[in-house]
Length: 362
Image (cartoon, rainbow, N blue to C red):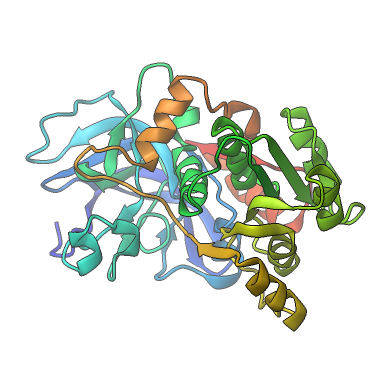
């Protein structure tokens, strides 16, 4: 194994992978099966989810090196354990935390791995889960509890990110109103968490009628097309003019962030969760309103993870799936074989068809 921990590959034992050779240059091809080094585990991928960030990463921005195997929302079964790993065995179901922290910086010393100063990442900086197998450190694996399928476990990463977003705002207390802008998978997961936390109202907005209708079918009747219903007026009518206690931008589109800021009540909290798709200009009047409301604005990008096995966003998400407090299965709209993955990713990019959570399987 190289000094930086990158797994070596066995060229004689090939596996199939969706390999990004350059921006937009996706190829399904055989590559060497990675060999785990000391303290590492090779995981046979069961499912790997497509994140909204994967589309610009593949077709617009590129990754940090080429070639790269993308995909960071993954779960599967243990295939082979490297030296020193004796608490897992082949066939054990595991979810994979994709962030590889350095362990040396001040953030890592505090256990705040998502704030690591020099992190690596499966699926963007190092090969990820759009393949038959991936290698990860043992410390990045969590056993999947009984009653949780590998499909569900592959959604642990976005579920944990959604939970962390609400926790950044101090959670969503019983009786509060949550407003969520953007009804992709992550926004719908935020909605499920807000409901599970006891929010009296979970009010959802999107500009795509199909997503609004999908949210209503999932049991969120107060889902609205923000092009037809002004969010501030809609929330005002539901809250006696007060607005949302917690307002979440889960879209990343500039209008969604502006709407989330406009929708928050006095003393409320705004969470910036969606990856930004462009620059945002805030009117002076809106900034003035936020100042007078003394609204708090929180930013988030990932989730809390404990290498020691303590309570964290990942374990909370898996436990919520096991207890059925979270039901993520209805969010899955596509299960795609690896051989057909390129066409589906291109369709998502081009807006051809309706997609929520897409899971790729080898």
